[in-house]
Structures are given as structure tokens and as C-alpha cells.
Image 1 (tube, rainbow, N blue to C red):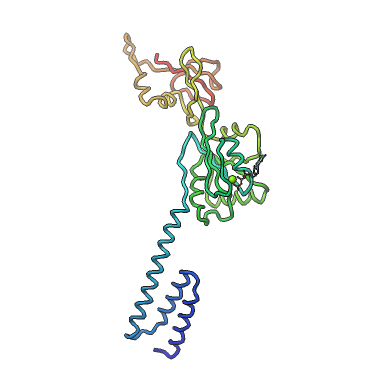
Image 2 (tube, protein in one colour; image 1 turned 120 degrees about the vertical axis):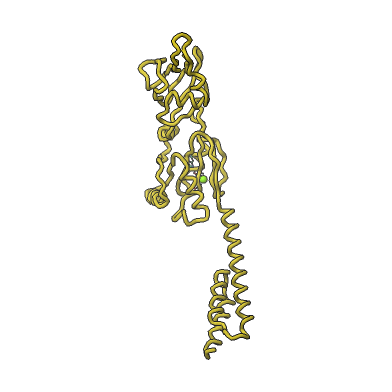
Length: 286
Ligand SMILES: Nc1nc2c(ncn2[C@@H]2O[C@H](COP(=O)(O)OP(=O)(O)OP(=O)(O)O)[C@@H](O)[C@H]2O)c(=O)[nH]1
Ligand SMILES: [Mg+2]
């Protein structure tokens, strides 16, 4: 054993004893192991150090696992679409959530808050994310909050000044979140502004001679009368395709449509006709 080895070992022990955290303790123990005497009589000592390292590592591993469990949040999807309120601190997110959905939020509770917005009968989920800070992805909750933003259909952005807007832009870009964004500015018709940016249309069905049914059906933009029929009943088309008693020809179902996409109200349309937001549709078998 070199002359100064004893001295080095004593120093390493001192460092270990001074350690404040388990990480530092492990570091100290590793150093002790690297300078510990290697002769046979020191075997017990070395085994003891190794044992201590293993125990500390196990403890840290357990802590990490339970920390992960408590710092994950997820929100069950509800409604036809999800709108995420994202912003810096004290920008009126909770106030807006309450105005829109009636949801009562708890201040100072740093987890997402949820409400349901009824837009002319279409139910939309609204989620408020706790205020965004620098390097969100590095924070405890960051990754699961980003996951919520990523799976929403629209972001409504809240900030107090251009610096805060830059911070939000940076964080969203860093997380590669590329969603439609509406900048909140307390406008009166914000419901319509939200709806315009969602990938949806709302359509009301109706029975002949009756008023349109309520609530409307939310369909993807670009949906046809056929898609509406399928939405109402999976077997609709099968059930509706009938053979003419005399000619044997298949009679295709059709629809009367009222709304923006037709020249006059009640126009007869085929099943491939593309529907528009606000249309009223009467489905006919023959
Ligand atoms: N009258 C009025 N008060 C508002 C409006 N927006 C925000 N406030 C008030 O401003 C304060 C902060 O609003 P919050 O809605 O809590 O802000 P927040 O963005 O949810 O804050 P954090 O979640 O802490 O980031 C509250 O006292 C609100 O009542 C508004 O449009 N009108
Ligand atoms: Mg809030």
C-alpha cells in the first residue's frame, strides 16, 4: 500500500461524513472504495462500502419511482373536442374557464382544471394548465402537462406582455407543439372564435314536418350526408339501401338539406353531399 493511501482514504471518509444528500454520500463512498486498501484484511471494509452504495442506490431508485407517480397528471377526454388554456401566471385563465364552463377552480392548486363548455348543444372540454414557466419540460409535471396540450385540438393563449408571449412561444416550440392557437383578448364572441378553429361542424337532423332535433351532432369538417347517417346508426346505409319492388334497382337514400351549402332550403341532396356547419338534414329512405 502506497504511503499516502491511508491519508487519501481518511480524506474520502471525511468527505463522505460531510455529505448532505444521498447522491453526495454515494459519491463519497465511491471515492472511499477507489482509495481503500486492497490487501486481504481490508476485504470486509471494501464489502461494507459496496453494500452501503447498493443500499443508497436502491433507496434513490425507490424515491424516483414514487416521485414519478405523484407528479403525473392525465385527464380523460370528454366531449367533441378539447380546448387547452395555456398561459403565464395571473392572466385570467381560471376566470375565463369559470365564465365559459361554470367550473369553480381552486387557486394555488397547481394541477390542470377542467370544465365543459356547451356551444349550441355541442359539448367541448376545456382544460386550464397551471402557469407556464421557463423550461417546462424539465419540471416535475412538465411532461404530462405537455402531453395534455399536445392531445388537445386548440390552444387558447394567455399572457400579460410581449415577453411572456415570447416565453410561451419558445416553450411550445421547444416541445414541438404545433396546434391551432387562439390568442385570448377578452372578445365577446370568443365562443365563435373557438368553434371556427376546431376541426368540427355541427349538424342537426330532423324528421319531416318537425323542428330540427337538439342537440346537434358534431362531425369532422368535410363530412358528407353519408357520414352523418353512419354517425346516427352504423347500419343505417345497409338498412336504407332498398331494392325497388318493380325494377329491382337499388334505391339510394337521400336527404333534404337546409344551410349554407345548398342553393335553397330543403334542397334534395345525395349521400355524397358535403355538409357545412349549421346544416339541418332530413334523411330519407326513398
Ligand atoms: N373582472 C375581471 N376579473 C378578471 C378577469 N380576468 C382575470 N380576472 C381576475 O384576475 C385575477 C387572476 O385571474 P385568474 O383567472 O385566477 O388568473 P390565472 O391565469 O388562472 O392565474 P394562475 O392560474 O395562478 O396562473 C382574479 O382575481 C380574477 O378574478 C376579467 O376578465 N374580468
Ligand atoms: Mg388559474
